[in-house]
Amino acid sequence: MRIALLSYRSKEHCGGQGVYVRYLSQGLADLGHDVEVFSGQPYPEDLDPRVTLTKVPSLDLYREPDPFRTPRLHEFTSATDVLEYVLTLTGCFSEPLTFTLRANKIMRTRARDFDVVHDNQSLGYGLLAMMRRHIPVVATVHHPISRDRKVDLAAASWRRKLSVARWYSFVPMQARVARRIPVVLAVAGASAADSVADFDLDPAQMRVVPLGVDTDLFAPSDARVPGRIVAIASADRPLKGVVHLLEALAKLRTEHDVELQLVSHLEPGGATERRIAELGLTDAVTVVSGVSDADLGSLLASAEIMCVPSLYEGFSLPTVEAMSCGTPVVASRAGALPEVVGTDAAGQSECALLVEPGDSEALAAAMRQLIESPDTRARLGAAGRRRALERYSWTSVAEATVAAYSEAMTLARTNPKD
Image (cartoon, rainbow, N blue to C red; front, side):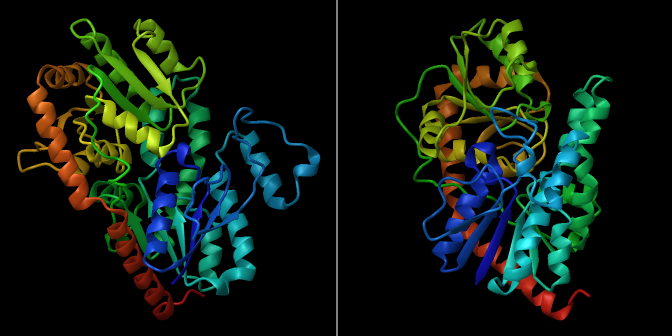
């Protein structure tokens, strides 16, 4: 099968979407399929050599270290460039739309090169133009960004609410596009249900295909650092619940010698950095960014606790990676997290301690329980490793994804779009 995998940003350190592109494309190649990744900036760095990378350049207006820069006149080479700049000037996040418009321009001459196009949460109007040319399209919705919008609006001051709403103005577009795509992949049952509710999708569109983990790279280690807690927040946003973790850490360190390794890109002088200083945690929190997979695996395997304090997660690949490392997890009972760690009829998990989202007292109590009980840590860690091995392999993810491709191709033949 010839597969075009689209992702408006795919560098792994930008979050779970980059990890998804790298390992899904590798898994598809392992099954013998031809895969070409079409990516906007920042581009992926470590694709499998069997996978072709086609760069879809933009004005790259959010790049570091000069986000929201003013491009030079010679950089404008198309109407899409102008649209991207104008939307950014008005406070909109323009990448999902403009990336798909550029990808559609490429597909005008390359449509016959592929059996299926797989979109990784761009959900821009360019996909509809591809479908009008009878290209089978599948989309992955890791979780509806409407959930991020709701949390960010609730956390914003009244002065910032308008700018936050403007930033998320692409969300209605994503909902409209998703409703037109016949096969939509979700990474968990909870995120599928949320997509149906928020985007008004037909449940018949949804296929649940979880994410995978490299269980050899993310493996247990005997070199645990006493008192080490690890947390991963791909974005410095209220949705990730880091502020509640910091408050819990401040309570916990009055009783125990603990440290937090926070893997994140924090905004310099932003709310998280200020809260670390206000709570007197500067000496107890180390912020790490840009780590390789190997370094991340080593870091997770060195911890006594992995904490996931998110207010919502559509899946949470870092949680699976921690489980694969045999690291016990403390997580919010939010979004897909209970589904990821697995719960019984009473809502309890063999792999994790679950607490209510946004409850720093409960987070502190759960982490205290694990710090004080090596036996509980060992039990949860061993159960997490078993669950990762049994349920979350990239080969099985690729196989299930190919089944969705075949279904989309059949639907495109039997129900062609005008």
